[in-house]
Amino acid sequence: MLILGEVIEKLKDVISDSGLSKKIFDKDVATALNIPQATFATMKRRNSIPYEEILEFCALKKISVNWLFFDQAVDMLKKETEKFFYVRYFSDIGASAGGGAYDFDENFEIITLDEKIMHSMVGMGSTNLEAIHVNGESMEPTLQDGSIVFLDRNQININKEGVFIVSTTAGLFIKRIRQRADGMVELISDNKIYSPEVIAPDEINIVGKVVGNIERL
Image (cartoon, rainbow, N blue to C red; front, side, top):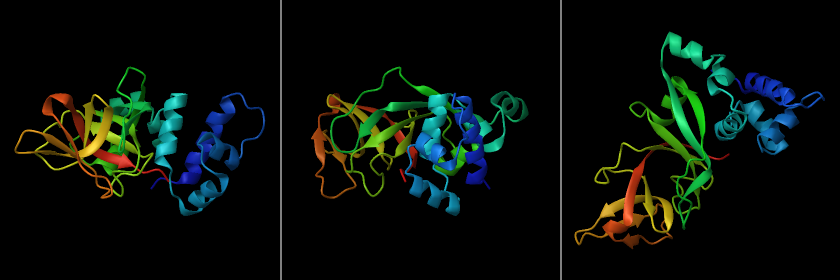
């Protein structure tokens, strides 16, 4: 089992190597992860690992998640099992659960996730994934505002149940999708205070299916 205290000690080493000459404390790690100190202390006591914030930190610092969590270098992991995943993480891109949002571009980081972590979040079967943020609350309680979602671009069949990321003239959206008998497409929110949005089929492109997520704490 992963122990947050052990991960924190590694994060302290990374922060120390970033040029800080002072002794690194838990509060410095909390600051680096953008987590309030009191919240971080509670998480440490409960061994509640802030995956989302750690993924963002690793992407920013270009650190292998495998090393941080499992002491495994990517090259070593490849030689031993070849069971690791590359995820294109668009840290600046959000798919909106409520209104217009950005479109994909080439500004992304590659994060490497061990098989154990990936399967704990998205299950088996999805290996070519991208990660972006959720903006807005219209998909609550299924997806929280600010959470990270993992997208499988190979799954675009809207006749299968699930949550999809779609590209429209208004930007990216995370919605459930229903094809109507008249050919129009409904974008459906899980938050019932939001009414379905109706759009013409030639104005929508199915980017992929949401196969997993990490909620913001």
